[in-house]
Image 1 (cartoon, rainbow, N blue to C red):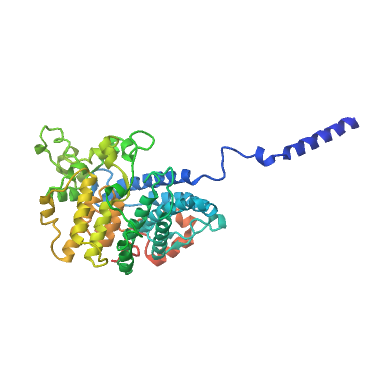
Image 2 (tube, rainbow, N blue to C red):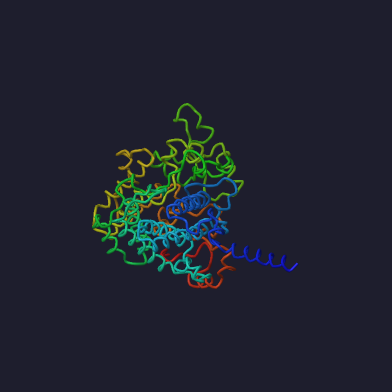
Length: 492
């Protein structure tokens, strides 16, 4: 019996020590890596951010900027906004992977090119968050592993200081960087990413130009294109190109027809395009259903609906839905055709937008490089070209388009044309409208916001419990947490 017990003891000891040999190797899951390479992280960030932005743009951004209007479920059009968290959630979910790329670059100097691209993405992402909400968590958002679980809400001024510094660093790094792999905006071309970094610097400097004198910084960029290259044509703008087949098709392509058709052409945009005889009308929208199948386009009618009607009024406007123009087919059922793929894209920034910004900066005397009228004409031409069109001389010469008049009249023309060009980029159009006041928009008809167009999104309700003290400090500093409190750069 004693002998048997001794054997049991020896066997147990053998098993015990045998199990400790190569313990880490045996108990490491080969399918659960501790680190994910930067080239695998970046495409996921890009895809998720763009999909979230496109969703919020369709449901809210295009509506508030009167690119589109709703003919049912009209709360958004009447400014009955609750939480709108797509942008917030996307930024704070994906910033973790941005930080992972930055950490990988700290460990491996050969990843400095990925660090620079990650800084550009980070800058764009946080600009969306702060321009929509105002003060938001920024400097402490990526320090959870350091025990920072309740990040402070940084002031918008501090956030913009960080954004501009990151873009400047990216420009310097990308000047000597090698191309990267597996990313979905420029296919890894770092020279293009460098131009985006500097073009975004110009956008964001203009964004804060009513608060801070940015003339010297703008002049430094545009006067030295070798050091600070920017977009030189449509082929260089930053867009996300969708696929013709699953799993990454244009987001609206898979929408059910009813959900798509509750958004119609806005009367504001449609009437403006009709007044200018602007051919972009035929891309943005289509004839009313009763006329679009007629043999001759001379019989076509384009009728947008007023923004902010009540449910009954919106349904019955102009005799009903059959007499209300739908959104253009290239943004829906034809989004996967060759023509649709060239137009229905996710947009970070276009060449046309950059040219409009330069026209404004030159007109205001913030830069001395170039000619405002030339920038303006190039911007319109670039917008037309994006849709495979060419502006005719008669279009550019008409009174409401020609670059003539007082400085204020010229700035209004820039703003109007920029708004037209930002179709389906509703949030960028909204941010720009808040800053410039152009185009001059009337609040939606039966709005529930005391005839005020909203100027921000409310913070997610979850922040009251998850990060209540820091949210409260931001509200005290910034103003009431409602859709009418202006962000820092939005001077009333």
